[in-house]
Length: 240
Image 1 (cartoon, rainbow, N blue to C red):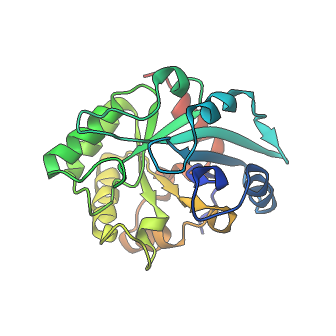
Image 2: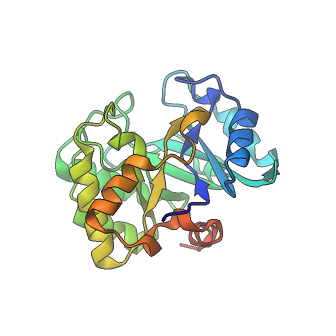
């Protein structure tokens, strides 16, 4: 039996697609579902119709406790090139609670395995990046052993993205990539983070597809950071 307290990869209407749900809608649902911590991670400005820089600048004034749960305000920043350039400046990133970095087709065309892996690793060199978004994306093949070793060295989490594993997912055959990531994390006893990637409230805290794979390979429950909001907060607050 798995019990999870947090989901930190979610999007509201501000990300510009798939939902009309506001921040309040998201928090209300998460609170009603008994979650202890919700993270809002809107797409960076390089995604068409997403948030502007001023949106992220204003997040420092948002309340951290609402409707009985802890709310984190972050960003899913876009990796813009193979040197790991990101679409938010550091003076904004440092004021956010956390940053997730990922590769998306509107921002970066896929490269070779080495180029994609280099891009992830260079993005992790940024001290404000704490999570890599959907590294399972088959369009961006990577060297997962090298990626995990770099993540361990930089104290960054690799995400197991539930949306990638959904039957209607658009990231290709992500299951085998996620299997490789989980097996490596199990071998090295390094934690992972489950994420819904929910656009709107309907999938907040839904890790069903990820859990099917976790059960299939008997991944250690104690290595899933979603079990404890306090452990997750300790992880991302650690100085790099």
